[in-house]
Every structure is written in C-alpha cells, then in structure tokens.
Length: 149
Image (cartoon, rainbow, N blue to C red; front, side, top):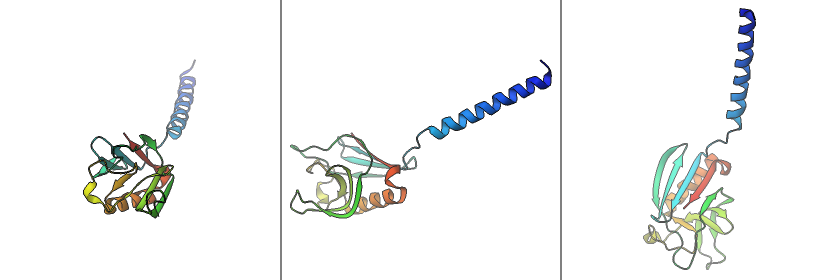
C-alpha cells in the first residue's frame, strides 16, 4: 500500500472515531443543574448547583410514626403556596412535590428544624424553601433531582 493510501485510511479511521465520540458524548445523560440531597440521619439538605455546593440547610423530615420516602426523584409539581387538605389546612409555602402528596416546603415552625418533626414532608425555613423553589424554576424541573437517604 502506498503512503497516500495509508494516509487516506488513517483519515477515515480518524473521522470514524470523531463521529463515534460525538455520538457517545451526545447520548450521555446530562448532570442535573440542581441537586438537593437530603440526609435524614443528620436532618440536613445540601444544595448543589451546576456541580458546586451552594447551601447546606437544616430540615425536618418524618417524626416517629411517619415516613419520608427515600430515593431519587424529579419534582412533579411546584406550588408557590399550598394548603394541606390532610393536615388541617396547614400552609406549605414554596412546595416542591416529588412523590404523591410528599413535598419539600417551607415551615413557620423553624424551631423544629434539624429534628425529625414532620408527617413525612421535608420542611425548610421559608427563606430557604423560597431559594430552592426559585432555583428549580430557573433551572427547570427536568434539570433538578432530589436525593433522599
């Protein structure tokens, strides 16, 4: 095979690998823009935006006799102000619903943050709930995930 034939063969190989790499990297799922990690053991939420830790906040999850779902979730619905029909019309500002009636939301009972105190939802200080809500709206629910463990 001549030198020019070898060069042409290597060009085709280079083109093939460039196309293959383009398809491979394009098919890879993009990382979530907003990740809210809830650690039930420490009653803390770590908020990661575009790979950077932006905040660590105290939360309240389910108290004894109740359950906070564990797992990885996408937000299902956002409501600026929701009132719980199940629990005496209790206000749930900046609600981010992730599984049925379970939500991350603000609470006015900030003295209970850092301790298990809820009926199963994940409670935040109202200012922190508002910040999370706005981050999710800005980045989109498809670029957000909630990790609860």
